[in-house]
Image 1 (cartoon, rainbow, N blue to C red):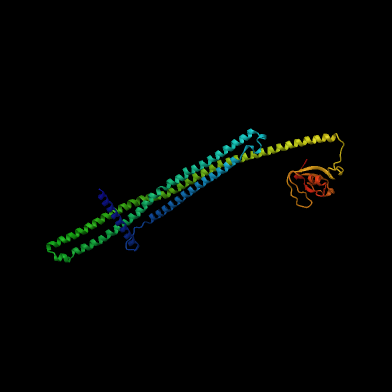
Image 2: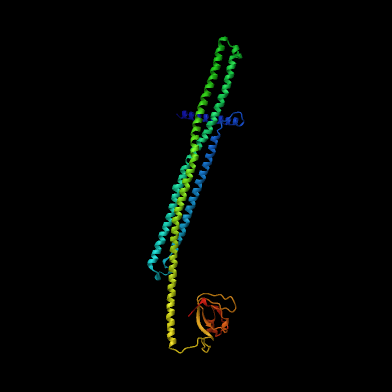
Length: 402
């Protein structure tokens, strides 16, 4: 059995090698112009369109995969950004004791929901494009390898048909010549043979010629049938496949555009929600800041009220001291405290550090005072040196009365 199998395999291999040699020989003869070639311009155009269609579809499939990879990358980047925001968001940033705990809890809940919805949207978007667009293109492209293989087979069978046709034509010419020879008085063999044998020789030659002729005719018919069957099938399939490309592209891009529109629409809503959450946080910060300022204003009002009642019970004093009090410099008005750093930009300016206490003084010449500017000397310098030579001007809005 093994030897029989080997023999069959060797036989098939020999047949295949012989076919390849015959096809190669036929193509050489066709290129040299010694054998005519079957040409079908309409079919060649179909094949050109098929190759273009396959290349376009393959490129679209590749670009869709790249797009999906980009979507996944963008999803991962968005998730990391959202996770970073969620990690940074802490209820006690703005002072949980002063805030409404219920509002804080509500904002946290909104933030969590927003992050979950965003992640779901990205996952759905990626899955929808995969299912509706990429899978559709994958299915569309699965038919091309089989058709491509049959086109190649059709080309081989066309060469086989041309070879069989040329072989049959050459035998036809040879048969006519042999018939002409047989009709003439014969060859040397016939002349040397007895008269009764000459007829047998002629009959043998005719039979041999007819056998080769009949075999070539059968081979030609078989090659023609195989070629024409493949040719007819492909001539029906290729135009239909070419027309089908438009529907495939329309469905692919309509589906992609629809999913993009839905995704970006939903994502814009979530982005607006996130913006609203940030607005609420800013409002809370401003409310807390305003509450602190209001508390300071209340304390200041109480202090002023106490000072007023104290001043009402004591004799009035001049707003500007003449320096008779050894604790205050001449021209003293009131004390201020620096609430911001101020870097002096001129020799007559006083440099401030936040927290510095300054004794505000009256200008020697009131006309020299600019709006929004005060004259003064730092309290620490006055206490140590009792000297106002270090006085200078400074912006009033960088200080606060104390």
